[in-house]
Image (cartoon, rainbow, N blue to C red):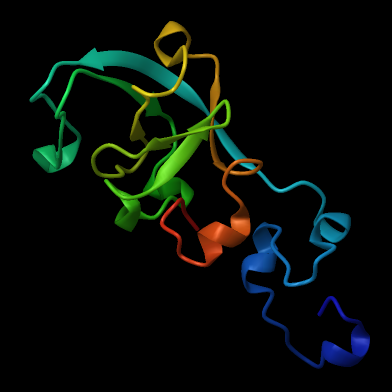
Length: 144
């Protein structure tokens, strides 16, 4: 489809190209910058042993700082990445803590510098720190 009309035929399947990925090296020149960021809704401390999310599938092994992000499986975030995937805040990866719910996901931001001080920083699900190509290759980072 991106190679020209002679490759389009009657039907094309853009696949991940719909969200900006492209097998071509110059994908950014075709699609522009590709990012998925979401604002954090809240940041709260959790004590050792406290759980987060449905089914208490995440239990803190140490005092932790949990950020709640307003993005969930209703927005395209895969439920399968609960307790496995990552987002990034200010260039530092933060693991997903607990299950992905319909409208929210929680991140363990304990090791993110200054994470407890502000809810203004956004969580990057793909962009500069986590590439869309890594997500597509199934490196357990994100979504879609």
